[in-house]
Length: 377
Ligand SMILES: Cc1ncc(COP(=O)(O)O)c(C=O)c1O
Image (cartoon, rainbow, N blue to C red; front, side, top):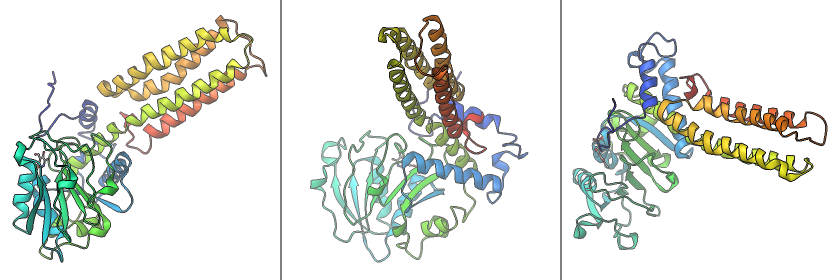
C-alpha cells in the first residue's frame, strides 16, 4: 500500500507518473534502454528533454525571452549561483527576509556581495510578508531576492512584488507549478524539483535572457547560466532521469486542460441542443433529453474522467467515451421519445457524429501528440 506523503522534502509523485516510469524502466519506447542508460546527447534523451521543456513552457506560459535551464545543485546551490550570475558591474543584492529559506539565501549571498535586507518579518517571528511599501530597496542593486513560499514557516506570497528595473529573483522551490505565475514579472525563478516536479537532483532555473550577460568571471561553467543556455543545459551531463520524471509530471499536470476541453465540449453540446430545440415541435420533448445529457455529461463523466485520470491514468478512454456515450444517449432518446426533427433526415445524427469526431480529434491530438503523449500508457 502506498502512503500519503505530505513531507516538504522529496514529496509524493503522481502515481500514473511512477507507473509509467516503471513500465518504461527496462525499455524506453523500444529504444532497448532505460532512460538512465541513455546518452544525454542521443536523439532519445534530447527528445525527452525538449518535450519536458516545451510542456513546462506551456504549463507556466513562459515567454519566449526566458531560458529554461535544467541544472544540478539544488536551490541551496542557487543561493550562491544567483549572485554569481547577476553581480557583474554591481555590488549589492537586496533580500526580503521572510524566514528560514530567505535567511539561508542571504547568508550565502554575503560571500559574494553586499547584502541589503530590504525588509524583514523577524519582528513577528516570520509570520507574514512585509508589504512592498515598507521595502527599502537599493538603487542600482543587482537584484531583489524573495522566497515566495517559505516551506518551513509556511509564509507564502499572495501577490507579486514590483521591483521596476531591478530584476526580481524568486526561490519558488516549494510551490512552483501549484499556481499560475506571471513569469514576466520576474527576472529569475529557481527551485529544486523534488517537491512538485520530480526526483531530487534537478534544479530548474527560468531566467530572462537579457540577464545572461551579468555573470562574474569566476562563475563556474556548470553554473554559468549563459553558458548552460547556449549548451541547452548540457554543458555537463544533466540529471537525465530526473528530467525524464519531471517531464512525465509535466504531462500529467497538462491533464488540467482536459477540463477546458470538457467545458468547450459542454458549451458546444448546449449550442447543439439549443439548435435542436428550434427544430422540435414541442420544446418539452427536450427536457428528458437535456436532463440525460447533463446527467451523463457532467454529473458522471466529468468527475469520473477527472478521478480516473488522477488515480489510474485512464483519462483518454473516458474523454473519448464522453461524447460517444452522449451520442448514444441522444440517439436512444430520439428513438424512444419519438422526437421528430424538421430538416433533412439524419441531420441530428450528422451533427452528433461531427461533434463526436471533433472532440475525439481534439483529445487525440492533445494526448497523443508525438510518441510520448500521455495517453500512450
Ligand atoms: C524554499 C526552499 N528553498 C530551498 C530549499 C533547499 O533546496 P535544495 O535542498 O534542493 O537545495 C528548500 C527545500 O529543501 C526550500 O523549501
